[in-house]
Image (cartoon, rainbow, N blue to C red):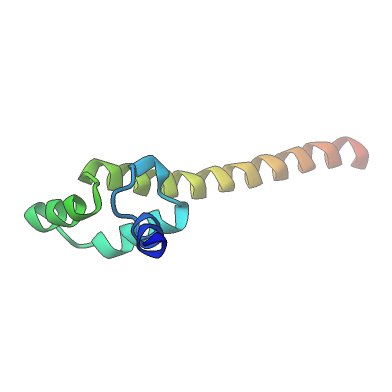
Length: 88
């Protein structure tokens, strides 16, 4: 009985969207990629999601990549500023 409960909670079914792990969210985005209209809505319904959850997760994943790049650029800029007075 306990095993069945564990399986249903770890499979992504009957969970709140905010309880999904990053890995589960990525898999959900991959599985639902290319689905439109009724097919997407049906896929979401089976998992207790709405299409706007997938849209937000996709935006979140994309924002992480952009943020990381900005941080790297900011660090490079700081390094250049520090090196400039030392060279003079």
